[in-house]
Image (cartoon, rainbow, N blue to C red):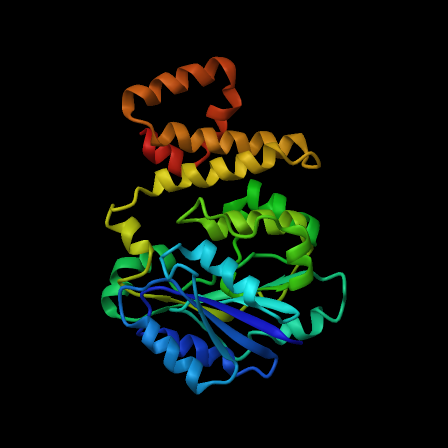
Length: 313
């Protein structure tokens, strides 16, 4: 295997060295691609040092040296990659020694286009644990059961809570399949949830197989400067970002001629549910009355959505 590990770097001078070294432990890792996204800290200098020290580490920036967000930054890394397989790693996370154990066997089958595994969690400080333990706990982020590839996309769309999730950090993709079937790759229109939207489309177009689900193969590093800090501090409204996410998913699904109509309708209702939940109170009730008459199932699906209920009540 020749694996390209893509690491977008933003505000991660304290953590990126650990991320890089966790990837370099594997002989299968052909290259580590750092894409620095105009960090406000000293991350660029740290990345330059890593590229000078390690032959397998390459460093890039956007042509304008600007900040473009995680999606376009990952896209640039994919463009620059030359391995047969793509793996992603956030700069404040790290791989565990079993990261590619399942992949080495599963990718011997040419029908396997992607493999996903379980993600663990590590708190870099007691303050971070105090802030985010209720969100992450000590749980694995994983799909809870082993599913055939055809079940992965509808499982995420219909049964997000009971189906489980897989993470970018625990995903490995066959590069040829990614480039042939995914256009666009990560969407630049989403600053948050761009990985969720990407994974929805990826699981629709590619045959993804479960790898190691009962133990972590990578670790999410939680600290006070995570992107989720902005959501937690109310600088970013989580409901608003989910409206944008489901709008993107709905726009994509509505133009996908091969997608079953029942799934398209469900996606449309999810979008409307978040749209109503995020609206100001007078507009919220107006939208509810409107949809009660023209699209009652949108309201019904909203009632079963916890974020919709929180925003409504």
